[in-house]
Length: 443
Image: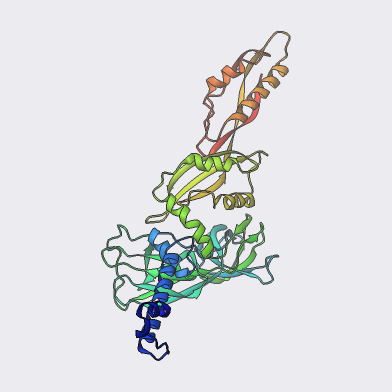
């Protein structure tokens, strides 16, 4: 710039010392220009999803499209509690009751917490409840009475899976959005740099907690990812919360696996585009079924239920899908978990898919048969069973078979002249069931 001015002004500008007033002005303009270029470059970069480098920039873009950052996911396990001889009176294990489990893959025992009350009526022997890996954290705040309050938790690494809020001792409902909430006592949660953050409304979209009201939030801090608990690995004895003299044995009847670290910035960067494409997208049942049928070992797959997740407010779709395996055996808990884990990054980002075993319904046939000449009833019965076994093997989940279709099929067997079945109803199954052939008795 100095050379440019020297060429333009000639001898009128020949003093290039730093303390010259014009040189100082030029340096100031050069600095401002350089700073403006840097600011514009950073503004463009931080408002572009693929190029943003600051976590707060990505969080702001996620808020704009409604993308929920995923916190740490705890491993959950279903527990069965038992009381020898039955409960002498009403007994319970309170929610938030902690216990520890030794896991071979961990150097230290893993801490679990009951996430719901386990209750026993008098004489009851067994009860069930859900537990999650992690430590319960309780934070208390005072309401300012202002609209749109945001309150941040005190411990990093929170999970959004189990969050309860009490305002002056009364529970408030969790929502994913304040849309349509009016003045109802609701709250929503988000994750900001790993800290749980509570959000309240303005009395038009969600009620404002009264001024000076005590707000108590209880949430879970998971202690590690991908914890695997084998069947029966949990075997502890806990005193009843309302009667410590009575001991309750607690175990897990099924294998359990899961848990994940909090979502990273790079993971969110990859997931947000899929989330935006899924917003208001028509959900195709065939998408899930086709995906599951590409998984090694799955023979049949059927989606039988699509609805909102069983919580109030706007939630993703929950899809129930039932499967059968090539082996003919039901999938184990570990296999189901592995299938859902494989499916998670491939499915519609606005949905939750729950994979379960199709329930087998066994049908038996009784009837009378007249074999063709030169054939015995034993030969006719074996041929009928072989033909029916093949037909039942072709049935899909939820597919029924009428008696008339069965009789017509049996009349096509060369060894049979005529047949009469004594079954009084069609072979019908529910949407989540699959028909299986049992015994065939033809006399």
